[in-house]
Image (cartoon, rainbow, N blue to C red; front, side, top):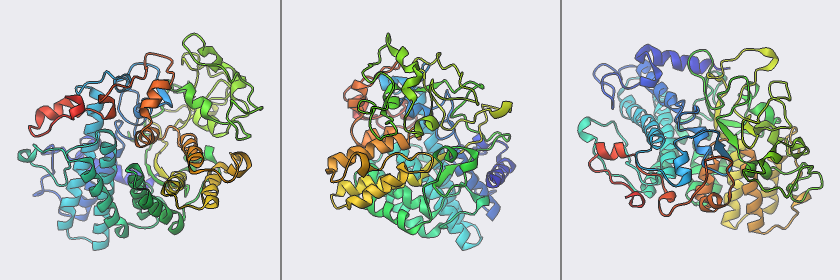
Length: 523
């Protein structure tokens, strides 16, 4: 049920008349405290603005011309754009500080941070139930932490703004990533006890203590603090009632949105101008972003072996993609006997779309589109493909299990059987049933061998969930990927030292902030 989002939208509209302009009524940086921040209703409306910011197309709402989910996927070895896009310049090594998509991603994160700061600063002064007040503030701090994690993983050092700004406060220096990370960790640790352990169905989409602890684990992992990441993720596993959903396919449908695998999702609703555009399409499969052959070939066969080794693979395992030879990607045999998660995530020449096999993906150069986050028009039902009702899942339990497995192995102090068990939980969903590690990769794997298994599992299980880019960054594998991956159109990958190591601070922000300096790599 999506009752709660309707309440949030109504509260937003009552105050602002337009969710995208929320908190921009009298001052672009703050609400007027003389006329607002007086009642519990004001506090709820302010909190609504924080959640509303996450729906932006430049964050988790997607869309072909924005800078969020799809576009960040499109600078990895998993995906590419079927037409030109601003982030394309980052992948090609020709971006500039004036890049509009980079600026849009920066602005969308700071919009949410600004709204969160308003709640954190003003809700304490409101006379209301103290437990509810603490929860509202904790939710705002979580959202601020999430957005600062986005910024620190792309721009590295950024301005750390922790309270509402006046125009006179607009000039501020950037803080080092380490300081930003410390703030994220401190905030997340402080709010866990103020958040509920479970979220009622009517409030789905709000932050729980499990979400805060999961984001804490992700923050530790992204910063190579493995023991702390292992400890935090283990608490989520042991202390909460999360679990692996029995159907991977259902998990990414409307029917699966109440699953206890979803720790936090961004809520979307059709028909009230609150839908997402991640998979925007017109009855045909989504085409603005497509899967790379490298991702397609990463899916194992159902015997648990890679296509280069499995006797069940019916395609040409020796084929190497080039602009001249890419046609082999349209061979239906290539997609038979593969990990069932492939057909949930991707639309290939061997799968159906909208109950029909003839879905014509030949206008996509590699012939493979993304199904995940799409609503298919089943049975001729007309849908507004620009107003998708599917939620985007920011954190789910499978990710927590894999974070625990990876961080545990990285500490060197781990139980092989426990690591095998959590990976097998993911592989052995009833509608997936990929072989267990011990039955294919074998027992007694070295730490490096086990890490290879975990990395592969992350790629397959979490494909197209806005995590691959950050994984490549923290593993320091982007340079290798850019040099080796084949991209079947103008979205080539090119690593340029030193600018490819960090995104540029948007020029317009440097122009408007006399204390903000561009990264040395971009000067």
